[in-house]
Amino acid sequence: MAEEHNSGILLESGTNEIEIMEFTIDGNLYGINVAKVREIIMSAPVKTMPHAHAAVEGIFKPRDIVITVVDLPRYLGVEKEKTSKDLFIVTNFNKMYIAFRVHTVVGISRISWMDIHKPDKTVSGGSDGVATGIAQCGENLVTILDFERIVAEIAPETTIQVEEIDRMGPRSRSNEPIWIAEDSILLSKMIRDCLNKAGYANLRMFPNGRELWEALNALPQGDRLADQVALIITDIEMPQMDGHRLTKLVKSSPRFQPVPLIIFSSLISEEMRIKGRQLGADEQMSKPEIGHLVDVMDHLLSEKKG
Image (cartoon, rainbow, N blue to C red; front, side, top):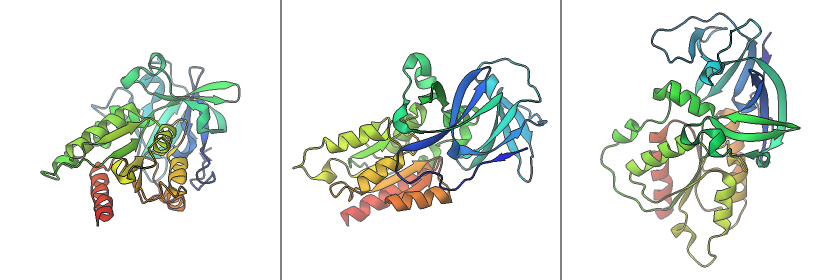
């Protein structure tokens, strides 16, 4: 029996809350943002695909769509026999449906992003790690996995592509100060490299919305704001402070409201667009559309000058 998850707006906009679905692999607790989950179903027979990544089981077709299945235990290095009691968590992000095999689903906890902390390098594995945060859910510590990082490794062609920037041809250099909040180490590097290649040389990276917001408030009052921060780009999912909370704070501040703000996230859907508009975001777009992001940056910055 499938357990459906409403893709509507479950949480009030900008409250800095997240709903975490807890699941287990070999008895260890892991978590995923409920906003990424479409349904939970019993595991089903899977058709194997030749030359696939070792963690890709294959494909199955639960209804009218073909979905890739990732053996999450195997990806995490757990060699355990598959059973009929295993579950598939069917996700939708980056405009893709992917099912992840897990052993059990425990439940859903609603917590503040302030209760999610960046793991240190001994836990996360540094730039190669897949733990994006450690969440305190009741009495349990839950490891939040970086599903975007997992998919980027399994299918590099589905993530941010520098070739999109190459196709734009020669571009002039810009020293406009661009501030970016992105918690994924891998995606942060990809975004920085692509924007540098597109000519944007003055980038300041932040691992979450809270650090960007604190840096904004630390700016000297007397200086011209546009000379210090010309545009903000933010992810949605981040420890400490998410992108929606950051957007609400920026756009409700008389001082910072004029700064153009782009939400650049794998979670963009029609429901999320409504939420972003309510909070005052100037533009919203889905990863991995890095070429589109550059076009929108060009437009917003030229509008300010005009």
